Length: 508
Image 1: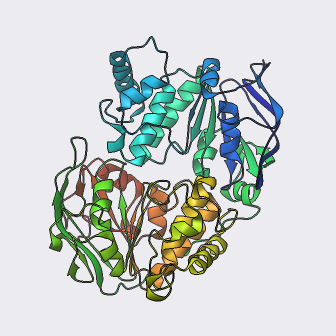
Image 2: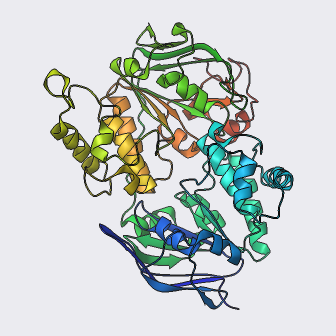
Image 3: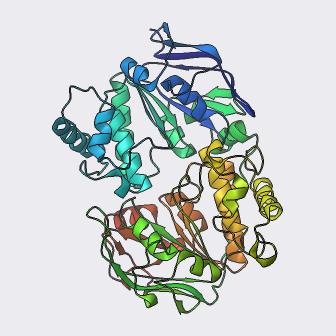
């Protein structure tokens, strides 16, 4: 039996880096094959070469034993290759169904596509409304659209990049069942994930990349997480130590925050209340699209419709204050969308520092911008967080997703905030970088910062938070001490089924 996909000596060079250096990889029919590597190891470039989104400089691709030259994604789809990118390729002004239609045979009607999306989304437990404009979707919901779009092409090779980051633990199990069923029909799956437990539970083989080269091909089921980490980064990730700490003064309060949805497809917030004290990390768990984006916008100042007293910083009502006014009071913010909101793609890393750091450290006399100062800050963040980039002058768009995430988080951590609101702090970063980011957040907490972490990574929330809330359909659960919570309990709460405050949860 011929391999479904065989890569031999794939090499791709860019001016500043060799992304893939003679990479070889074999995927058999029906095989679920993991590709593992730290940020910047060349995983995304290799997948784009398979999908025709980039042209390798050397090497060959065989498909079912026949050499092929994949010159475009459209050509890849004719072979039966579908891919879900880490950075999504959707048109904001079109609906979900219209976006999906663009990638399908033109003979298919929009009505048929709409029905197909509903059927496929229901089959996979990926709730999505085909009629919604993409610009109204959260990052997690957009990922669901990409997954459903790929599945509708009935692929023979499906490339999935971090597919479970938007799912509840129960939905992850359902997706794994479906992927195993898909593989049983002969479909091959290339599975990129930084979740080592997932790779060990799901995948038949694992190719590990390090610095653009193959570091090993292993059976993940017989490897430990530590062994996979050593293959990937040359060492085990540092241990993150969460020590109990007595919280200090109240720093951030959300008091009965209710806001109508800003558009027909948004989520209304209903009497959301939470407190975050100095020296405390409070987490908010939930499936994407349940009001996280609306809550974050109300906290950051992007949505200033709340009553002034509904959002309080250091005892001051700021519900109608601008983002700049909130920053002056010590609030800093890391959005979930890296490119476009967290960073301007075409600007350099040094220039991106100014997005949230127009303060005494970056401005010279009389308020003039000091290029030397913000370049020094960017250089310090690059060094401190191990960002792989061509220096402070590198455009944000030139970084891999994980490296850009490290830079954006580092930029805000370096600002010495009094309150830090973080959305998806380690989305798409490797295990070593995730451990470092989490350790930095804990260090901020121990230094007296109040942190609110909104994440769909339950392992992350259990590792670093002191208390947990769950958000579902615009409502917020009571808080519970993280040490007393379980993954199963939080998974149930994600459907909106939590007890009244005081029954089993610790209300704050």
